[in-house]
Length: 419
Ligand code: HEM
Image (cartoon, rainbow, N blue to C red; front, side, top):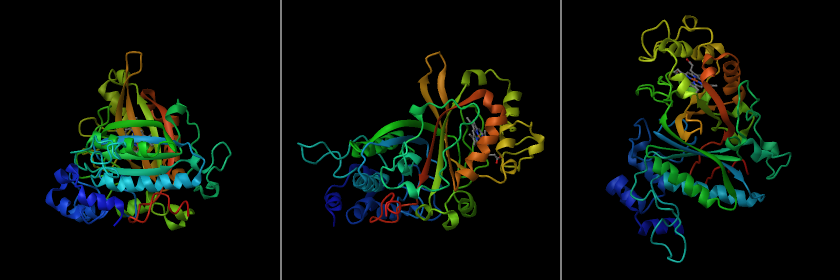
């Protein structure tokens, strides 16, 4: 038994007790977080309830096909060390901490009870909270492979061809301070404090090796990966995620989301590629637009969410019934050579813009098997012609290679990449 699990055996966290009851107590004394999480019945077709744990180990990282949680804390990091071994040990430490936190356990020896002379291993603000379906999903940005022409970590030759740098699209107003990043961590949970706690503790573990480049809080999920559930609405008041890839549609996930063996980057098989875009909405102008214009912009009704020419939200869209510049018509796979992606974005509001307007919008997150066959063709079309462009501005952008899942306690994020 490792020192870590030995400590866990004697110190049963209050959080685990509250979240899991007696089963968690019995398991926690003998098993790692992942095994325990799996044993409390979250595998198979039963979706975890709001307070439960989502299994950490598996062929794919959790947080992609997982039913979308209510809250997001997303962070992009710059790697500040030039030492490959230091980066590897950080990724191992992050993996260990993530396995614990997603199971509702504190980092290391916890927030209390350690040496009084030393800072606690865990910052403590999640004590007493349930696992809240926390998922932590890690990604590697293009600059991890080469930065300013330098191959800092001997990874240049391993950059997957599908991880392309995005071109500048018409209308882009990107802020470099909210774009890019060597690493990313997407934390999703049904409790915002649990998501924030996770990012904070990973940043803390990374002190001296990584620094937070930018981060984004999100609420009110704007996409659903569970078609039977009520579709959430974005800040424009429209149902968003109606025609998304479902987290249980394994055929569509294999075709459009998960990297396959024939895709040319063996270390990425089972992984995916993430495009993140911070899209600001001109909320005040939108709120003065007539209902008919709002509906024309999407090609769907606002109340039911039905596509033009149809009655119900989930009816097959008739693209010809929509205006030529309607968002849904232009984004639909039939307009883009079959391109599809799994959207998993969140709404955000970050105070005001200093001019009396809300700084609000959509933090767009889309997972795909190859950016060149997912986001790129769709956004090329949207940037050129989408009627929605009058009301939005893309102000942040980043792409990441999302490696496959961590298989077991001996595996770690990036093991295949650094092999
Ligand atoms: C603030 C920006 C955006 C808003 C408010 C927005 C809103 C919506 C809404 C309301 C729908 C219809 C419901 C649905 O099927 O999900 C939709 C569909 C869709 N959007 Fe967006 N969207 C935005 C940006 C984007 C971007 C940047 C992309 C990709 C480049 C995109 C891709 C799609 C796709 C693929 C569909 C489904 C089309 C279909 O198959 O019918 N959206 N969006």
